[in-house]
Image (tube, rainbow, N blue to C red; front, side, top):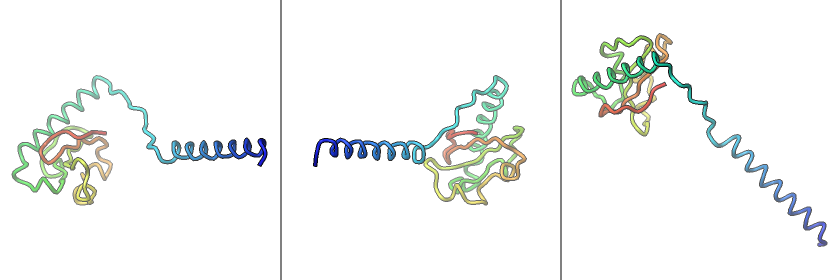
Length: 127
């Protein structure tokens, strides 16, 4: 094998590796949307929803099987416009994705924001 053939093989090898890396970056790594900054008013409503959700969980966690990941705002009064309060596990389990544990208002489109808390009433995330 002459020098030119070796250079061609090395170039092809490098190109294949680059294509595989590019595929990995584009297809496999999760693409995240940019984080939208909340306005002061949105932040105030979020903080209110978070506090009320944690308080609701703390108040009723002995009255309902909270480990099944119920939607607390479906079971009890949660008066925060456009928000629901949902119990989930961290990390998520199959029970968190069951239809009966999803917040009806969120699924029906009556609310489009949620607070997720753990069964021990700790904040997980919001949307």
